[in-house]
Image (cartoon, rainbow over all chains, first blue to last red; front, side, top):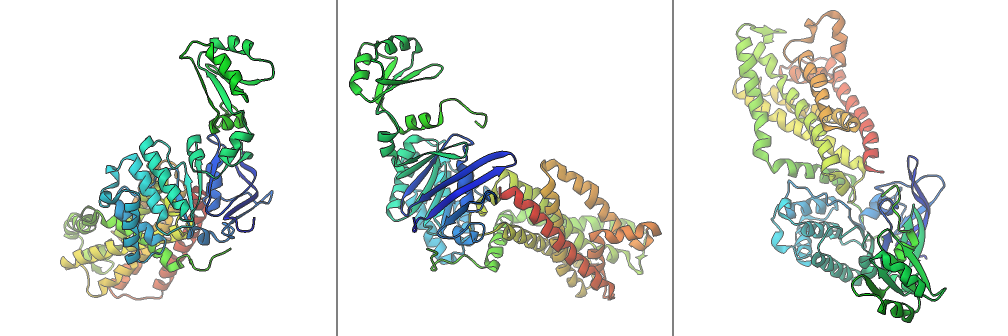
Length: 310
Length: 261
């Protein structure tokens, strides 16, 4: 893909003996939202950091990274001046107020002071933080801090926005606001790359998701299309495991796939009627019949059990 | 598709923006940050100079008060730069994660720490200037030659900033900086010619005093202030420059691994 904004080709990254990224290849098309999904320690943040040389890939085996046509290890500045980064930690300067924080970054981006002022005002307005322009960082709620970091990342009018878990720990109102802003930015031509643990977030925002496990790509595709190709469309959830034998006995052979965990059982099937027939005979309250979601795709692809890195 | 319409800032602009960040954070609390450089030399001159000075008329053939006064601009530059690039750097590195944020903007790790060493030098300059000003009010600083101690304050600040960054690159627990201050800086304060000339050290210890970076900074500041020029001063200047460059290079090499994974 010649005009892709980001291209990873067989990239490896190790920390001492831990392989964080194990031969990953993918590309991100312009003006799309690309989501990296994976459990903690799967390698998501490392991949984000490789883009702007917060991390450096292994020299061997050789892999290549191209961002706007630049290699981060040769032209990090060219990449950084075209990108905005929202790191996992807010890392705002608590000694400075909102506007001062932004002015420092405007200067780091080389934006002339006058243009910086109008850009700051415009972005604070956009992120609904206008009244907080002179507030100290300590006064801000978690959601305001997150929005402020997004403002900071947009100061240089980037063409690529990198967000590492943009809405982790935020309430639903703030999360939906941020989603709307990101959609608006994408419509304006911005390319967005994000990591998230919220499958709903990936489903809402991403045109393309890559599920990674132990540093390797396991599933890639449009989240809506993945529901059709990587998972049975319906699931019956039993939150009382004692119901399971009764349910399983009633299911015709070969019509369903069962995923047990310690305190619940999920029965996946292609045929809604099959699950509905069984569900109707169960006492209400301890079961739920629903369409499958991206979370089901994710858990199927990466397994339900915790691994050592979590 | 490398686009040509966007250009990253030039080196000077990048260094200035890092320097500017530190300056803004520092001047946020200008009163509490700016008072010590005015008060400390007064305390020292009153406590040591006026007390001890009554018993010691001259030291190294200059009035004792002048002997002390011409060292204080650089010792205060040393301490302020050392605090800035030990505790200050560690807080930015580990607690605030300030560098992690800054490095996402178009600056490199080199820019971050060269900018920081320049900032340490600037603080050294500011502190020396304050000390020279205060001491000249006491009449203990030869003027206008004493003003030459101010640029030496910059060089001293930059050198001790670079040395402190080396220490910061090794330290994993912020309390360990205390070893550097009590184990290295405080003894150096006494054995580098601040309160007595190093010529009065035992012959065997004199070469040791010449290894201490502060010795060269003090000799420069004092000699310039009392207009006692000699070729040795060029060697002192070279010593400061070499230590700054070597320590700075080594510190950046090590700190890069704390920031770039």
